[in-house]
Image (cartoon, rainbow, N blue to C red; front, side, top):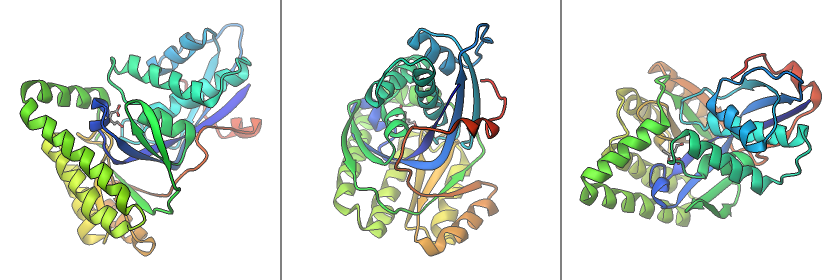
Length: 303
Ligand code: MEV
């Protein structure tokens, strides 16, 4: 039996634009997914397309149990974390000898095939390696210094489909390239400019995260009014430096960058608007092997 876990992530900058080869900055966060894989003579049928693809790609069969601290379909990279932890656990249980870079590449190919060819490498790379990464064109361009950012995530509890949101932006771009391409260029500029003020959280949040949010709205992924409510609550009532949609949008989550002292106030403002708040910081470990008695923490949810 092998037990592995992998963290979720937030996009600080660049979601959607990364699908078109633009840069993005994403950070691994503390909540994780725990996966137990066991060799069995008669493995039960796996129901999730992500898990099915993981076993198919590794060419083996086994049973799998998942315990997740990450809400699914909420923009926090839970499917990538499940995929990374599952591939890592299969690799370990069946002694296949793959290294982290290969796990990240395979996880990306699983996501791409389930999401019908459109998935950037961001979620799977960040979940595999942890930390804050600048990603471009399917590769890690740079590992950024691990900043002590205090984040409050606001989950709207409105589930979304990343594949559908990505497809929606793709259609918008196909019909109105002269509108959408400049928005993607502007997101790229915001991402690159943010690198100049990465240590200045007031500028990072108040200027660049806020602009990135407006650009995502212009791309049409603001969608659900709950997102605007949570962004406004975090900024106005809570005193965040800045706040934006994180992930695919259309529901899912927002992320607020905030002063340490304001975390609880911002979480309260989010909960007051019917969102679910998660106070978190950076995860620097990425995928990791858990002790076998981790099985006591895993529930029997087969996906
Ligand atoms: C989803 O977390 C982020 C998107 O940019 C899609 C992707 O990167 O594959 C919307």
